[in-house]
Length: 90
Image 1 (cartoon, rainbow, N blue to C red):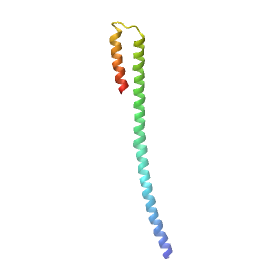
Image 2 (cartoon, rainbow, N blue to C red):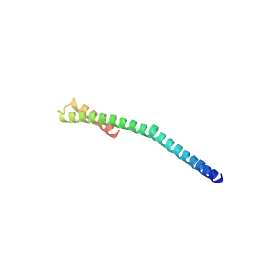
Image 3 (cartoon, rainbow, N blue to C red):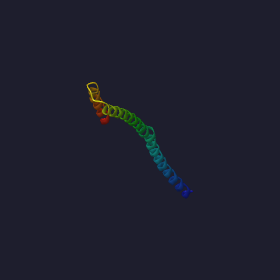
Image 4 (tube, one colour):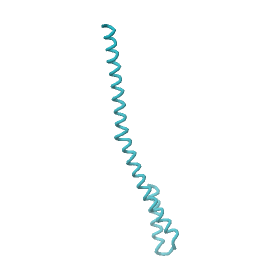
């Protein structure tokens, strides 16, 4: 009976340690799944949107640069360059 009691105590203590390890692991996985991955997906979508806007402004600027430069297109070209620079910085 004494050996059985010792074995049961050891199993109980080991089980508590295991439960604590599982709880810590579960909490870390919860953070990873519900916060980190979600934030990463939001950032990826924002990057994709910014990249598409950047490309659109870049194409507009290239088109204006290839066209004739007169009194009508110069203000548009300057505005396109400013907008492009702002988007590039973003």
